[in-house]
Length: 247
Length: 340
Image (cartoon, each protein chain N blue to C red):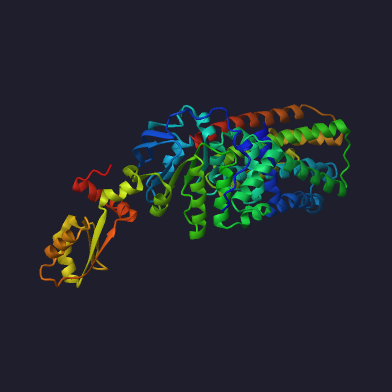
């Protein structure tokens, strides 16, 4: 446990010093929010003001991107000498990977706050008490943890950090084919089935319901189940991949 | 580099599993490793007494790093077995890891952390408290001449400083056995000298050091025992002195007056020539160094006193041994010489 904490602190220190990645992580939420609300918002009709509709989508897009960076960081540790040193010191792979995931969660919470701050400036009016905020944060964290573990597995699979960054790119596309930016019923029929049932949609809807003060339905449970499933599968895959890489 | 040692308290906080008494630091029997169609190791045997320095000497691709990775529990051998301080490297990985430190070929340091942060991190991972980890980092920075650089990010360090930090990180908890994989490859002469001093100090303090190198001078300087590895096989082993004696203690080098004379002599000598250099027109022969023997050789090759321009007699160097044993391994086998 203390090993994982030490390694989390290391990951946070490293990511706070990667100036380019840090700038991207901070600029992305702001720019995405501006692009969607100011540029696209006027042309998209969702029944509410677009800023009100799009906040959960931008939250998940940013979280997906930043969690995806875990793949690159894990890959670098696996291909550099770092993992050899840690293993020769009897530090477990689980401690290294959970350090990466915990650091990713911390990074993401900051970028999430930034998204909310920009949204508020653009006229976002949430209707949520402390409990609803807490629940929304919980669901977002579950999503971040799931995607970070998935990225860790991708980082263990990739043989170079270029390949690992390709994973980040893929994750970025998932929210577009969901209810994050436009309602699913406006999409072509062949896509609606996928869009309605892929994990991003229930997670988006759950956060939306929580923040807007509307009735919270089954979306929250479906979304959490997706997160738990992805996380469990990714942890199992990471363990197997780590064992294979270090056999 | 400084030679002050303090804080035995921290060094003494080693795991309770002290190495078993009277066992070898390293014993390997028949190690084999194959990657795809490439046989990297084919039956490597090693015996390294505790408190000694062993140099695994060989050219690139000889299998040195693979051997270190097997012995330091990072990969498993395909066949054979090995123990470190009496613990089996495959079945008792954790016990082995309590005894060892590894400084790999590529400095495993975080460029975006400072030297001090790197050291403190290792201390914390080794189970030291916050204050102890900080103090130990300070001592190591001083000992490795990195005190001023300690608060700078490692990205700004020179190659030599990086290697020193890497080694310092291996010594946060002083190991019973230290693996150094090519510790001076790519370093300038001064940094190399500094690294040698540190290894010498560690050996004096009773730390067993298992190092790999491509440099004969390094093996000669540091090692009690040299094992020469070539294409995955041990081609020679012994003390530096023994290896030098194995080839021929003295060599007679003859320089011929012209190409024709050189070519004829080289052809006549055949396998008797230890080294032939056509650019320099020289041929080297084994000799006991006595005037009688040298005169006899000169008379035999140059009865008319007209073919040989110059001669010299010198002691064999490890370079001679190395060339003979590695590049000439095939020749050696043809001659039926058993080097092992």
